[in-house]
Image 1 (tube, one colour):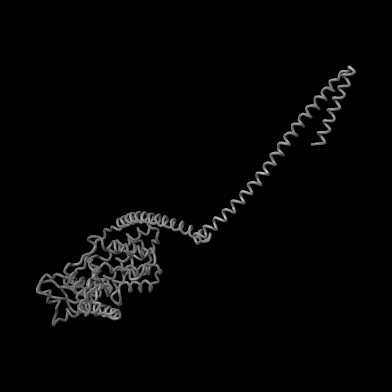
Image 2 (cartoon, rainbow, N blue to C red):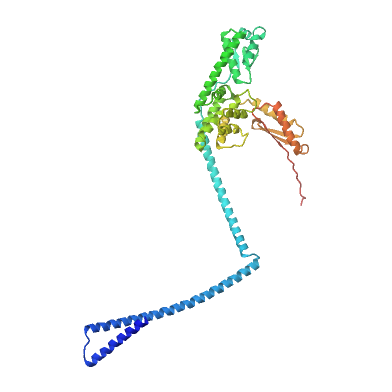
Length: 465
């Protein structure tokens, strides 16, 4: 920039001298020369302006450099002060910087944890409320689908006779006819002064065969040992056919096909089986419809629930095998190679085992919904009171027992013992003894859970002030 400036100045100076010479000689400059002079002057002016701006920028840059150095100095001083103050605070608080950070973070985390816990609790309460409402809707809708128009035929255990003559024929010479009938059917005949014959047997199917056979003999009036055996055999075949047909109807009504024939035959026995007055076919049909609808609503495996509901009580109609109806049902399901999920539904429908799946819970809920609805089941009040009282009396008869209470229709017994007479080790032995006594003496269905409780309390009073 300096060399260019010098050249321009020299050019301008030279043109000015030329102009002075012309004026002295009286010679005018040409137009081109005038334009050159004018252009040189403009360039000189611009260069002067640029030089001025350059000087201003250099001065400003120098000022900024000085200010930057000043700020750097101040920052250094601030850092030194900060460092000294932190050291002084650490000395006063007895904490290092890291420890202070940790303490602050812990306080923030605690505050956040309380806020998060509160929000979670609110969300859980809201979800619980909505879940209860949804569960009620699902259960009500499922129970509406479970309504059935099946009419149960209650088993009749008595046969009315027209006259005394037919009663004598049934008894036969020296009682041989009645002995033949009892041997052929497996039921006991009870005669009284009236014209009614009572058939007594724990097996409802045998009782039904005996009732039908006896009615046929009464109508035929030809009652001999050979005739009795013939009629009983034919009647047994008829009842077995009826049971198979009823089993098929039940399976088809709930949408189950290609089930093993032996299982179908056992399901047909439900026609003549009652639980607290509720016919087993009605109960199974209702429960399966309720369970299937619930499975659809909650997205569970519908086929598993269908089979679980259908077969959950099948052990009740098997009299040839010992054990609870739950265990018998599980054995049957495994015998005929049903899926393990269905076996679990049968095994867990009375909560004998913890629930292993949503399907098991649905079967349990459907069973309870069908069995506990108003009017589904009944039990004579006197018989119920007698059974509960018998269980409690047997339990109270043991030494050291303070009180006993039977719950859930006698299926759960709570025993309170005297702690000064029964030790913790003796408590286990006492529970086993009570269980054995109930098995021998009590009348009950299913299983009884015995819970012995030994409680020790110590209380003291403060001095009065």
